[in-house]
Length: 305
Ligand SMILES: Cc1cc2nc3c(=O)[nH]c(=O)nc-3n(C[C@H](O)[C@H](O)[C@H](O)COP(=O)(O)OP(=O)(O)OC[C@H]3O[C@@H](n4cnc5c(N)ncnc54)[C@H](O)[C@@H]3O)c2cc1C
Image 1 (cartoon, rainbow, N blue to C red):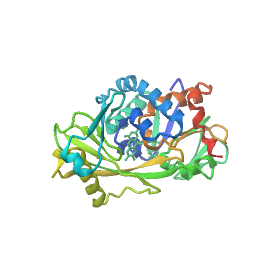
Image 2 (image 1 turned 120 degrees about the horizontal axis):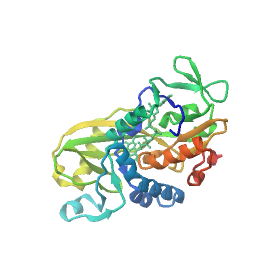
Image 3 (image 1 turned 90 degrees about the vertical axis):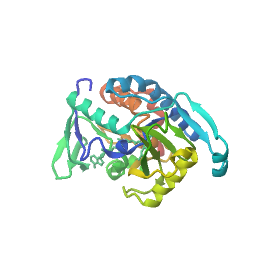
Image 4 (image 1 turned 120 degrees about the vertical axis):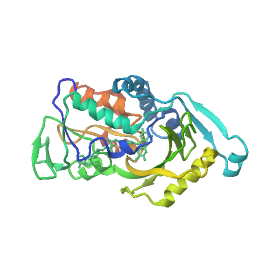
């Protein structure tokens, strides 16, 4: 915190998309699957991956072994033959629920003050917020980091009107020892988590609810069996949904807003966990260090006009 006094207003800290996520830290896969989009995003992703080992160590978390990508040509072929496998040496994963809890605990230890309430809007003066109960709070700097809900602040910060929700559903099955590491295809990933395998995730742009229709879970289970046939017949243990904060070019909006003293950290799309350590450095450098971090220059919130 570099000496700053920090208050977080959040009705549900350590939940949000970060809690619901798969937890992949996949610069290699993301770079290949987002070919043609903002090259700076790939650089940022690899820069963040390089920070992840120390970040995980500081938080007392373990990272998984390298991930495996599987090309599934068609369902019949994938069952008859071994699908083509590729090891993604630089891709790893973390348990996102442990990550959320651990980040929260370490913030508390560092003296961050949490208030379990939401921000309704920015206030009359530049660095003031109005809370859900109508109270106003003033600070030297405000950082807007409200995930997919950041778009509700667009009347105060027009840069945020481009943020949109992308719902994702995951499910898990009890299958001890079924997987040693993440296995993923273009549309699906399977993650070992304790004695379960987590299967994800759907992607529904524009949808902002946490319902879990049984058909979506069945679709995930069918896809999982195509990748790992031994999962056939497994029943879901837990199914859940989260909402990713989308942006038009799938890259974050990070930097000072048009309103003096208000900083935006939004639109992390499907990479908010991967990008967490580099995001933390950028925000600290710019907000507390008073410098412009060049690694964020391609991601300024005003780039959409
Ligand atoms: C299904 C799914 C799978 C994913 N898988 C991965 C993955 O494998 N790897 C990866 O890197 N990323 C993944 N992501 C993306 C990642 O979770 C997000 O990019 C990241 O969580 C975004 O962080 P955030 O803090 O902006 O938003 P969130 O994590 O959603 O946090 C936003 C916070 O803002 C709070 N809030 C909302 N409104 C208000 C308000 N009015 N006032 C105050 N607080 C408010 C919420 O309570 C919440 O705590 C996935 C996301 C989903 C949904």
